[in-house]
Image (cartoon, rainbow, N blue to C red):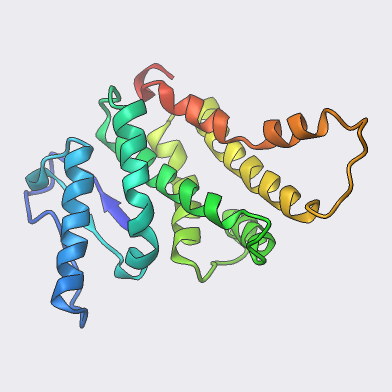
Amino acid sequence: MSTRFPSSKTPKRDFIEMASTTLPTNVIREIGESARLLLDRCSVENADAALIVDTETLELFTPYINHGIDTVTIGYNYIQDIKCRIYIVLYMACFFYFDDKFTPEYTASDHVTQDLFACVIGKSSPADPLQRLFCYLMTEAPICFPNHPASNIVITGTLNLVTSASLDYRTQDMKMPASAKRYTMFTRSISGVADVMGVFIFPASVR
Protein backbone atom coordinates (compact mmCIF):
# COMPACT_ATOMS: atom_id res chain seq x y z
CA MET A 1 0.00 0.00 0.00
CA SER A 2 1.36 3.37 -0.90
CA THR A 3 0.01 6.63 0.48
CA ARG A 4 0.85 9.99 -1.05
CA PHE A 5 0.26 13.14 0.90
CA PRO A 6 -0.63 16.65 -0.31
CA SER A 7 2.12 18.74 -1.87
CA SER A 8 1.97 22.35 -2.95
CA LYS A 9 3.89 21.31 -6.09
CA THR A 10 1.48 18.54 -7.00
CA PRO A 11 -1.59 19.44 -9.10
CA LYS A 12 -4.95 18.41 -7.75
CA ARG A 13 -6.27 15.13 -9.08
CA ASP A 14 -8.79 12.45 -8.35
CA PHE A 15 -8.27 11.17 -4.83
CA ILE A 16 -7.89 7.56 -5.95
CA GLU A 17 -5.56 6.35 -8.65
CA MET A 18 -5.57 2.67 -9.53
CA ALA A 19 -3.84 0.64 -12.18
CA SER A 20 -6.05 -1.18 -14.64
CA THR A 21 -7.74 -4.09 -12.94
CA THR A 22 -10.09 -6.97 -13.58
CA LEU A 23 -11.73 -6.61 -10.17
CA PRO A 24 -15.53 -6.59 -10.08
CA THR A 25 -17.16 -3.17 -10.03
CA ASN A 26 -18.57 -3.68 -6.54
CA VAL A 27 -15.09 -4.43 -5.16
CA ILE A 28 -13.66 -1.27 -6.73
CA ARG A 29 -16.58 0.68 -5.27
CA GLU A 30 -15.83 -0.75 -1.81
CA ILE A 31 -12.19 0.31 -2.16
CA GLY A 32 -13.29 3.83 -3.04
CA GLU A 33 -15.67 4.01 -0.09
CA SER A 34 -12.95 2.78 2.29
CA ALA A 35 -10.57 5.45 0.99
CA ARG A 36 -13.23 8.15 1.32
CA LEU A 37 -13.93 7.07 4.89
CA LEU A 38 -10.24 7.11 5.79
CA LEU A 39 -9.67 10.57 4.31
CA ASP A 40 -12.86 11.98 5.81
CA ARG A 41 -12.16 10.66 9.30
CA CYS A 42 -8.60 12.03 9.07
CA SER A 43 -9.98 15.44 8.01
CA VAL A 44 -8.31 15.31 4.60
CA GLU A 45 -9.96 16.98 1.62
CA ASN A 46 -10.45 14.43 -1.15
CA ALA A 47 -9.33 16.89 -3.81
CA ASP A 48 -6.06 17.58 -2.00
CA ALA A 49 -4.77 14.04 -1.60
CA ALA A 50 -4.09 11.03 -3.77
CA LEU A 51 -4.32 7.56 -2.33
CA ILE A 52 -3.09 4.57 -4.26
CA VAL A 53 -4.72 1.42 -2.97
CA ASP A 54 -3.02 -1.94 -3.35
CA THR A 55 -6.07 -4.13 -3.90
CA GLU A 56 -4.18 -7.16 -2.60
CA THR A 57 -4.53 -5.82 0.93
CA LEU A 58 -8.25 -5.06 0.70
CA GLU A 59 -9.61 -8.31 2.10
CA LEU A 60 -7.22 -8.30 5.06
CA PHE A 61 -7.16 -4.57 5.72
CA THR A 62 -10.85 -3.67 5.63
CA PRO A 63 -11.89 -5.25 8.97
CA TYR A 64 -9.14 -3.38 10.83
CA ILE A 65 -9.03 0.05 9.21
CA ASN A 66 -12.08 1.23 11.13
CA HIS A 67 -10.38 0.29 14.40
CA GLY A 68 -7.42 2.44 13.44
CA ILE A 69 -9.68 5.32 12.44
CA ASP A 70 -11.65 5.08 15.68
CA THR A 71 -8.43 5.10 17.71
CA VAL A 72 -7.23 8.29 16.03
CA THR A 73 -10.67 9.92 16.21
CA ILE A 74 -11.05 9.21 19.93
CA GLY A 75 -7.49 9.40 21.20
CA TYR A 76 -5.49 11.52 18.76
CA ASN A 77 -8.04 13.81 17.14
CA TYR A 78 -6.07 16.90 18.19
CA ILE A 79 -3.05 15.94 16.06
CA GLN A 80 -2.98 18.48 13.21
CA ASP A 81 -0.25 16.90 11.07
CA ILE A 82 -2.21 15.00 8.41
CA LYS A 83 0.77 12.80 7.56
CA CYS A 84 1.08 11.71 11.18
CA ARG A 85 -2.67 11.14 11.53
CA ILE A 86 -2.72 8.80 8.55
CA TYR A 87 0.44 7.08 9.78
CA ILE A 88 -1.18 6.41 13.16
CA VAL A 89 -4.35 5.09 11.48
CA LEU A 90 -2.30 2.64 9.40
CA TYR A 91 -0.09 1.66 12.34
CA MET A 92 -3.03 0.97 14.65
CA ALA A 93 -4.88 -0.96 11.92
CA CYS A 94 -1.81 -3.17 11.50
CA PHE A 95 -1.47 -3.52 15.27
CA PHE A 96 -5.04 -4.77 15.65
CA TYR A 97 -4.50 -7.16 12.75
CA PHE A 98 -1.38 -8.66 14.31
CA ASP A 99 -2.95 -8.67 17.77
CA ASP A 100 -5.42 -11.16 16.33
CA LYS A 101 -2.57 -13.15 14.81
CA PHE A 102 -0.52 -13.20 18.01
CA THR A 103 -2.65 -15.67 19.96
CA PRO A 104 -1.67 -19.08 21.36
CA GLU A 105 -4.45 -20.68 19.31
CA TYR A 106 -2.97 -19.30 16.09
CA THR A 107 -0.37 -21.95 15.27
CA ALA A 108 1.56 -19.76 12.84
CA SER A 109 2.01 -16.85 15.25
CA ASP A 110 5.66 -17.64 15.87
CA HIS A 111 6.28 -17.75 12.12
CA VAL A 112 4.56 -14.37 11.82
CA THR A 113 6.90 -12.83 14.38
CA GLN A 114 10.01 -14.27 12.75
CA ASP A 115 8.83 -13.11 9.32
CA LEU A 116 8.32 -9.60 10.71
CA PHE A 117 11.81 -9.54 12.19
CA ALA A 118 13.33 -10.73 8.92
CA CYS A 119 11.39 -8.12 6.97
CA VAL A 120 12.28 -5.23 9.30
CA ILE A 121 16.00 -5.96 9.05
CA GLY A 122 15.74 -6.35 5.28
CA LYS A 123 16.44 -10.07 5.01
CA SER A 124 13.18 -11.02 3.34
CA SER A 125 9.82 -9.80 2.11
CA PRO A 126 6.88 -11.73 3.62
CA ALA A 127 4.00 -12.89 1.47
CA ASP A 128 1.44 -11.31 3.78
CA PRO A 129 0.81 -7.79 2.38
CA LEU A 130 0.01 -6.40 5.83
CA GLN A 131 3.32 -7.67 7.15
CA ARG A 132 4.99 -5.76 4.33
CA LEU A 133 2.90 -2.70 5.15
CA PHE A 134 3.84 -2.88 8.84
CA CYS A 135 7.52 -3.13 7.94
CA TYR A 136 7.13 -0.24 5.52
CA LEU A 137 5.68 1.85 8.34
CA MET A 138 8.87 1.22 10.31
CA THR A 139 10.94 2.73 7.50
CA GLU A 140 8.55 5.70 7.38
CA ALA A 141 8.77 6.42 11.13
CA PRO A 142 11.78 8.79 10.83
CA ILE A 143 9.88 10.77 8.18
CA CYS A 144 6.71 11.21 10.24
CA PHE A 145 8.65 11.68 13.47
CA PRO A 146 11.92 13.41 12.49
CA ASN A 147 13.07 13.71 16.10
CA HIS A 148 15.25 10.60 16.32
CA PRO A 149 14.39 9.58 19.91
CA ALA A 150 10.70 9.58 18.95
CA SER A 151 11.13 7.54 15.77
CA ASN A 152 13.54 5.21 17.56
CA ILE A 153 10.88 4.50 20.19
CA VAL A 154 8.34 3.71 17.48
CA ILE A 155 10.73 1.24 15.85
CA THR A 156 12.12 -0.39 19.00
CA GLY A 157 8.69 -0.47 20.62
CA THR A 158 7.33 -2.32 17.60
CA LEU A 159 10.18 -4.82 17.68
CA ASN A 160 9.53 -5.37 21.39
CA LEU A 161 5.87 -6.01 20.58
CA VAL A 162 6.94 -8.71 18.15
CA THR A 163 9.38 -10.14 20.71
CA SER A 164 6.64 -10.26 23.35
CA ALA A 165 4.28 -12.06 20.96
CA SER A 166 6.94 -14.64 20.15
CA LEU A 167 7.68 -15.13 23.85
CA ASP A 168 3.98 -15.63 24.62
CA TYR A 169 3.74 -18.27 21.93
CA ARG A 170 6.86 -20.17 22.90
CA THR A 171 6.05 -20.26 26.63
CA GLN A 172 2.33 -21.07 26.41
CA ASP A 173 2.84 -24.64 27.67
CA MET A 174 5.49 -23.72 30.21
CA LYS A 175 4.59 -24.31 33.86
CA MET A 176 5.37 -21.26 35.94
CA PRO A 177 6.22 -21.68 39.63
CA ALA A 178 4.15 -19.72 42.11
CA SER A 179 7.26 -17.74 43.02
CA ALA A 180 7.50 -16.25 39.51
CA LYS A 181 5.17 -13.40 40.39
CA ARG A 182 6.98 -10.85 38.27
CA TYR A 183 6.89 -12.86 35.06
CA THR A 184 3.47 -11.59 34.04
CA MET A 185 4.57 -8.01 34.62
CA PHE A 186 7.73 -8.67 32.63
CA THR A 187 5.84 -10.04 29.62
CA ARG A 188 3.52 -7.05 29.68
CA SER A 189 6.28 -4.48 30.03
CA ILE A 190 8.40 -5.96 27.26
CA SER A 191 5.63 -5.27 24.74
CA GLY A 192 6.46 -1.82 23.44
CA VAL A 193 3.07 -0.86 22.03
CA ALA A 194 2.36 1.36 25.05
CA ASP A 195 5.59 3.25 24.35
CA VAL A 196 4.62 3.71 20.71
CA MET A 197 1.15 4.97 21.59
CA GLY A 198 2.77 7.32 24.09
CA VAL A 199 4.91 8.82 21.32
CA PHE A 200 1.79 9.28 19.21
CA ILE A 201 0.29 11.52 21.93
CA PHE A 202 2.61 14.40 21.13
CA PRO A 203 2.56 16.41 17.89
CA ALA A 204 5.65 15.91 15.74
CA SER A 205 6.43 19.63 16.01
CA VAL A 206 7.16 19.40 19.76
CA ARG A 207 9.09 16.14 19.82
